Amino acid sequence: MTDANKWQELVSIIARLRGKDGCPWDKKQDHFTLKRYLLEECYEVIDAIDSQDDAALCDELGDVLLQVVLHSQIAAEENKFTIDDVVDNVSQKMIRRHPHIFSNAHADNAEDVLTMWEKIKAEEKGAQEQKKRGIMKINENLPALMLAQKAQDKAHRVGFDWPDISGAEEKLTEELKELSQAESADERQDELGDVLFSLVNVARFMDVDAEDALRASVRKFIKRFNYIEDTLNAKGLQWEDVSLADMDAIWNEAKGKEK
Image 1 (tube, rainbow, N blue to C red):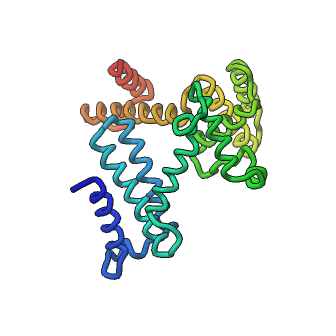
Image 2 (cartoon, rainbow, N blue to C red):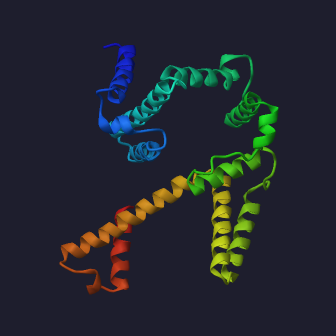
Image 3 (tube, rainbow, N blue to C red):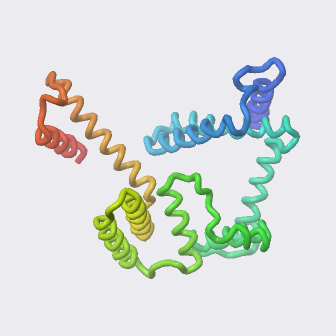
């Protein structure tokens, strides 16, 4: 089967599942009911990437593609757009936003490309629309750390930023002090948010993705905690049978095995 036929087969499968004699579950879905599945599948892709599992990545990318085709089929049934429109739109967008590749513009580095991308994006939306949306128009449904880093990146691109990491580090120290002085629950929540935002800024100056960094640390914590539990089970012990010092010793043992 040719590549084009494989693509058309997928589109036809989804159309049949949504058709008159199709699957009851698929037929009852709409854009809103499918939101959670699209989000879940995207996180499955991230997990496969982090696991460096090529077979899983291939499978999970297929699941994301399935969601794209399913949403497009629903839109086609409502005479709004088709999967061909989706593909054509993104193809044309890539050509427009990469004039250094497809035209005579010039970009020396990735930063130049991002600046050019934002400028072209603003021109596409029109001056009036851009004025209404503003520089800081971001999807606020993003995970909080990712949202913070995107907001800081946008501020950086118009010059609202410290010249180097020292400013971000000083701000973090300042926010930690304010957190320690917070008295009410509302104040603690507010100040903790400022600490996290400042920490993301430090990560940005270090060219570290805060979302990835925290996810890696959480996974490391889970792995070491599981080691403690496995060790206790192997010795026939329960959690209440050991002290914090005992658990700490096993934790350090797990940590040592990682090196």
